[in-house]
Length: 308
Image 1 (tube, rainbow, N blue to C red):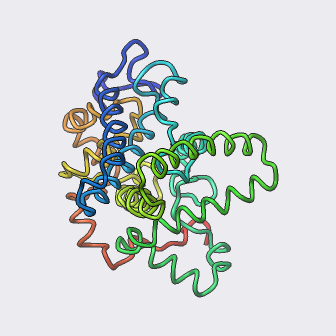
Image 2: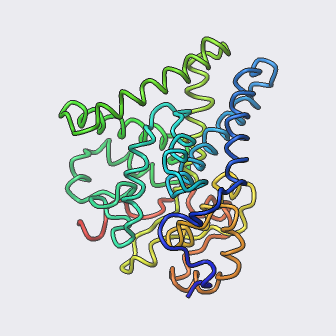
C-alpha cells in the first residue's frame, strides 16, 4: 500500500498549512494572463496564441487543484482563486460538482454515472445517426480530439446546460447568472481594455487552451472490468507534466486527491511499482507514445461494454 506519509484522507493535504507553491502558481497564471493580453500587440502572433492557450489550460489545471481543497483550508478562498472564468464557457461551480462526481471510482467511464466519460450507451450511439457516429469515431483519435474535440466538448456541454436552464433546474439559473458577470468582466478586459478581437481570444486562447486540456484527458481513462484498472499513468512528460500539474500521474491522483500537485512526482516515484501493479500496467511513456499509437487510430470503442 502507499506510504503512510502519503495516505491522505479526504480532499485536503493539510488542514493547517497554506500551500505556498500553489499560491505562487496562481499569481503566475493570473499575472501572465494580464501581461499577455495587455501587451499582445508587442508579441509575435504565434507566441500570443501559444502562450494564451497555455495559460488557459494551466488555469484549468489550477481550477482542478482548487476543487480538491488546495491551496488553503478555506473553501471560499480556494473557490475564489479558481472561479475567474478565463475560458468563458465553463462555470466553476458546475465543473466542481461534476468533477467530484467523477471521483466515484467505482463508476469510472460509465456514460451514465461518470460525467467525464467519453463513452456512449448503445442507445445514445444509435441516436447519433451516421454523421454523428462518424464525428464521434473521429473524436476517439488523438488528431480528432485535438482539432474537433474542443468544439464537440464545448457545444455539447452548452446544449446540455441550455436544456437544464430552460427546465429551471434548481440553482442552474443562478449559477449561470453569476458566471455571466465574470464572463462580462473578462471580455471587457480583453476587448475594451486590451483591444484583442473577440475571435482571436476565442480561438487563440480559449480553443487552443481547450485542445491542450483535451490532450491530458484523452488517454486518462479506459474501460476495464476492474475499476482500479481504468485509470492510466503517463510517465516522462516534464513539460506537459507542469502544464497539467502532474495530473498525468492520474492513477495516483485518483487514489490520493489530497496530495498537492508539487508533491505528486515524489510520491509517485516512491510508490511507482505498487501503482503500476494496481492499475494493471496501463502506463504510457510520455505523450509522444500516445501520439504514435492513437494519432489516427481510435483509443477505444466509443460504446461502453456494459451498456451495449
